[in-house]
Image (spheres, rainbow, N blue to C red):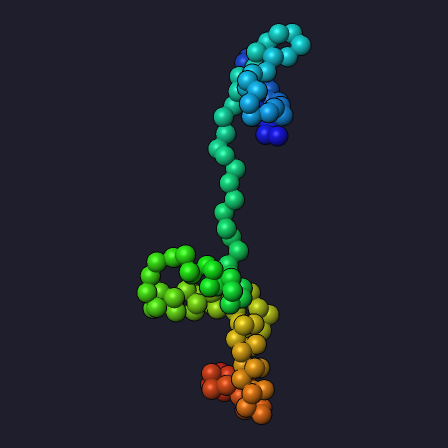
Length: 118
């Protein structure tokens, strides 16, 4: 059930009251004083989690408009964010792909990995 905030009319005193949505939104204390309802901004959730795997990235970009270049730019931006959060400064997704590349080629390093000297 939602919580509503009421203010005492003569002082800066507030109270939170839990009421049903279909009830009248009024509050009176035991002395019969009607408190004023305080209207607040609705609390919404903002997506703050960036996609971290291939499926999440497909879902994230599949609902947006743009061209292939925009997709590559977003992919690069997310890779840089993951790299900045990583301890060694390398994107964990990139390290995973490099490992798969190396395994499929009997230990040969990925060209980008060789270029970075890792």
